[in-house]
Length: 86
Image (cartoon, rainbow, N blue to C red; front, side):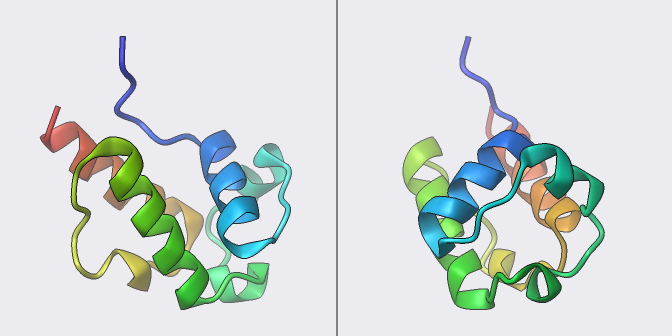
């Protein structure tokens, strides 16, 4: 079965790969309402993560995906978009 939900584990890997910032997935989940800027991830890094997810899932994300402010907001947007296309 193909999953259509991005988890904090996957987001932590994508952040490491795309922005070079390392997070323990559990810590990232605990900080899910902390702005990305505070976590050390800028909009350019988030844009790279958006591109990686689009390539991985073969689905375009909304144009303003990189404007999400927190991990929770980003995952909610990404997962609702993926589920809508499932």
